[in-house]
Length: 343
Ligand code: TRP
Image 1: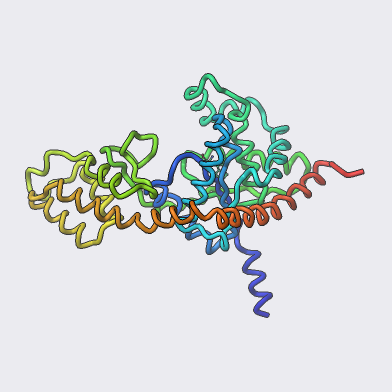
Image 2: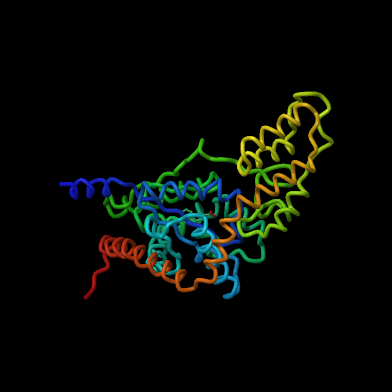
């Protein structure tokens, strides 16, 4: 009885897929913006999280860089709390079924719609010397990633909405073409209000690795690096009247403090600001101390995992096996639908 019940619960759980680009290190913005949601989701859904190494070939990395980046990303996501026992964590190229589905989808993806895709137009501008077919068909590969597991939910940021719309288009087109109801329509998983926006350290905008040197605090940063970046954070001349509204640069420092420091610390500096007694140097010193303490468990875990080759390869193998089980089933069925039959 209990087993039957559990079986139904498991069947009702939705399938979630998300891809992680193996570029650079994880920073606090990634952690609060996306990763914490992945960590929550792994308890409630069938989650597939993968490292998108096929996608990264569009920028022609060297073999060493490719491998190193994939490993670093895997280690950091594990250190941050993704659990290979709960979610399926895998490397995209370990599941070549994805590439086969990509091939099939490309037969029904039209040059016109691919050329109109915003991310493609951006890439043409960014790398005019390397406008390859992989860039053009980035959306079909992303669609393959998602529908290979027949996922219904995709936790991604706003910048990926158009790719998701194209995924739905490709799924529906396949269904119509073969007169089947095979692929579902995956939807964006909006975690909206739970999202904490993390500002960068150089005044405006959010934390990001492309926003300039010193703007982001990485989970793997050494204490001294953190201290230096925090002490350089942009401030202003200080408040001149009590209870003055905080300008954006100051608001940002308080926002960072609100995620890594205690409430008492935050309230103390807030009070100092409101009574015009604040010394930004002191505030930044405290923020650096709290930031170093907050990131310490991540830093330690990353170091530990980086040297544990055996564990890392065990995780990758486990993920590959689980992801392939699901992907192979889809490919078998898709081949059948398309009309491939063995002789
Ligand atoms: N395009 C996504 C990004 O740039 C990464 C990605 C690749 C992805 N395949 C995916 C995200 C499938 C979700 C689902 O961040």
